[in-house]
Amino acid sequence: MSFDEFLHLLKNDQDELICKAETKRERKYGKHITFSRNVFVPVTHQCRNRCDYCSFVSDDPNTWILPKEYNEIIMKAKAEDCKEVLITLGEKPEEKYQSALKFLKALNFQTTVEYVNYLCGVALEQHLLPHSNLGVLSSSDLNLLKQTNASMGLMLETHSLRLMDEGKPHQNSPGKNPTLRINTIENAGKLKIPFTTGILVGIGETWQERIESLQLIADISRKYNHIQEVIVQNFNPQENTPMSDHPAPKEEDVLLTIALARKILPAGVSIQVPPNLNRERIITAINHGANDVGGISPITIDYINPNMIWQEEQYLIKELNLAGFSLKERLPVYPQYEKYLNTRMRGIIEEFKVDEKFSTSEN
Ligand code: SF4
Image: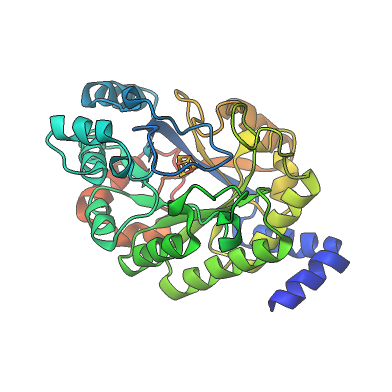
């Protein structure tokens, strides 16, 4: 379908759009909704960018996680049966902070990428699978991290340069330049890195920009076949940020964006909605085309949305079962992309497959 046809559907026949999206999800995924049991590791809150909606970013040099602290987190994750180590941090902190360079140098690392690669190696030693999101990366950095990551991620957020204009949320964030982000996502495709991306809904983008961002991701997915999931993340206003008074997107708009994502993206790409950001409407979101609720951690909070606590796994299971769905655990790499990984990571995956509770099927 063309952009005009999607826009027409959105404006004139929303019921048909929702019905088509739900049918597409049902055909591919049936009644199975997936999640990954993870531990969330915010390696540092220092970041070269300043997005107007972000409460994660901080100048504080003490936000760096030391190897000893990290080891403790990993052991706890192991004890809680987590499979994924989600590594998130500010983008290229050493470009902005001398303290970041000093921290890295004291540990004999030149760059944040080298440190994260080390941390991922530690997770692999404990037979946990890393998924890192470091922001914009060069091809050589992606290639290094490919050796220690089961998958990686970078939100496109939006393809619109307009949101970098003065007074817009990305005005102080060079790393949010869509050209740089598209390059990173495409380079990950060239390197066959299983990848997660997504859009951020409600930061001032238009419907046209939302549709075009999703079409762009769909094109990249068809070209490189590495995008395993697309997150439809709704903007969640945070206190003490420039956008604290900016309204959250309307429920109807979030749900229609989910339906559009399902319609626009290839059926094999999971549509992920964070359950903590869709607390009262997770079933409705699924009925609009979502099939995955992303990472849920039994031991750490969502550091990006600290005001939104994750539901407990048992609570989600109950809620889904009542609506006729089942919650299945998955790994940070989807089965169809395991072939992209090295033998070490594939060995760890084989160990997980021995556990009968664990879903390894594509659906
Ligand atoms: S949203 Fe990400 S890139 Fe933007 S300031 Fe926060 S940590 Fe940095």
